[in-house]
Image (cartoon, rainbow, N blue to C red; front, side, top):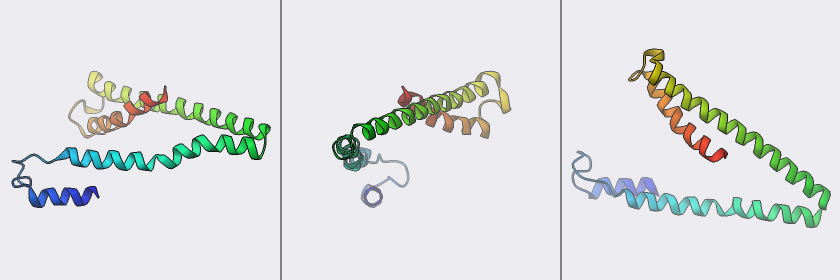
Length: 127
């Protein structure tokens, strides 16, 4: 749907191809937001109902095992996210401050900027 909207904007907004006009990015953001909210309904229902169903149908011991496994795997993911995000952030800082691997402006620095773009949400979501 977003591709169709982008194509529509290129076809209807004069000067968009040349870079002299502004795209209607609000429309694309609204479409992406609506789609992401719709896509998260099923995982949310699954997260809420699975402990209830397991606890009621199988029993409390199975529920304790499921919750213990979920907490343990969540902690492992949080530690991995935090460490990976910090490593990407520190790699970018190392290149910028110390001038390692050629310093700013190199392809290595550009790759580290991309890595830092991934690393920041990793660090933010792990807490």
